[in-house]
Amino acid sequence: MAQEKDLAAYEVVPPASEGFTPAFFVESTAPDNIDDKQSAPQTPDNCRPSDIDKIVEALTKQEKPKLLITVHGFNTPRKKVLDTFKESFIALNADDALKNQGLVCVGYRWPSEAMGTPWRSGLSAAPWFLVGILFVSLAAVYLVNFYFEICDWPKFAGVIATAVTATMAVIPLTLFGLRLIVYFRDGFRAANYGVPDLVNLIRDIDDRLPERPTDNPDDLAGRVDLSFIGHSMGGFVVTNAVRILSDVFSPLAIAAMRDVEAVGSEEERRQRELRSKIGKNFLLRRLVLVSPDIPAEVLLSGRGNVLQSSLKRFQDAHLFSNEGDEVLRNISTTANFFSLPTMSRRFGYRLGNVGALTEWGLSEDLTLGNLRVGAHTLETLYAELDAAQSEESFAQRLTYFDCTDAIDAEGHGVVTNAARNAPPNLTWLGHLRLLWAYVRGEVDVHSGYFLKPSLVRELIYRFAAIGYGDSERLYGGLANLSELCKSRQIKALKPGRDSVAAARTADAAKAAASP
View 1 (cartoon, rainbow, N blue to C red):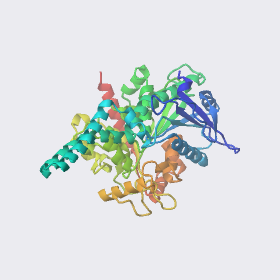
View 2: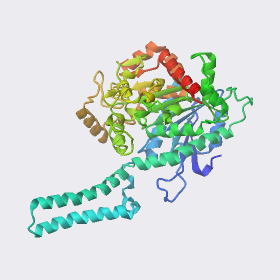
View 3: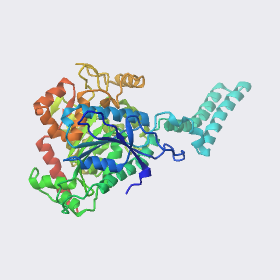
View 4: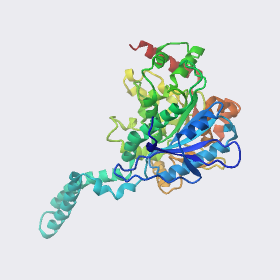
């Protein structure tokens, strides 16, 4: 059972009106720095102190309970997290289609900080060896220039000596710069605090939920639907937490993975539901990844990886991406350059930069040739990999929503500087302009999905709360939803029946063939 001191929970104070979806804010109490003095976090506005039992109580009051957990990304301090979750709760309650659905929302915060925050502790946290290199190199630059001014030495020799000593200072200055962008600091906290504390939160809720009326492990009745929205590095937190929570040694889970049944049959559907079981009371339903900071390589590799093993557990999975997300395209890829094991930059992009090569609207023509990462299609990238690595159709499991050109009802870009009938310029110069617009605060290419009312935001919450099938029916069917996406300049690709069947058959055949 999780220790209460590791998590702080708050209940969002409901308004006087009826039909308010229960909402909670839960945060890891891990500090930004391991040597920070811990103090009790301040209760957020419009919230009251709560605990895990209140979340359990809210779930038990629902006829068909659904727990939706939203996880934020990197470079997101507490105030920004609270503002984002507040907008999320407001948007969920403003959607009449999501009322009386048995929904309980939890905004989960792991310790993240804003870029530039750790500048004060840079020198005090640096190893003496690194500090020594920095000061010796800076002193050498000064002395070389000083002596060349008072000595009659050749000019080219002075230039060379200055370049050599200045190069010595580049390494520590680069490391200090990487510290300031907080990417790796957030990555450490996400892996070591965010994931374990999210696991403990879910285990704690599962442990405190009332016993289901049946002891039969095959009986899925009474289980709580568990769904996630993972934004940016939050996608990493969610997928890793699901891997830990999955009981890979469960005989039922192994059987569900290995038995080959007719795709689309009742037994095959049953096996997928058994595979989605988590703990004693949860059933994994839906995963919505929004601009996830996960290597796009996970779509290419046929071997097991963090996304593939997690995705198999969910019954719905959706990706909202943006080719103009300069945070992922530039900052994340640059920061991961020296750690990502690839020989070509073609394989260095992030999952949140996937683009669709189709017209605006929703299409069932999901093929590898219609998905692009960087300047190359997945089909082209697959062809460059070893055949043993690219034998599965894992990439065709997701539903893709390319929001690069997306606009709101007023015709303004949602995540880029797009306009009505005017997609953004994505040449190399256009990417630089878009990055500058993001730096100036004119557009939020990374988090804009959540910040204002739009079809994009509505789809994210509806898919996570009630699933794709029910959402499509709310819009009047596939054709109507496609027309709506077209009017908002969204490119959407969903698996057709054939691609879903092929992916599931490949999984089942591979599992059956394994010892």
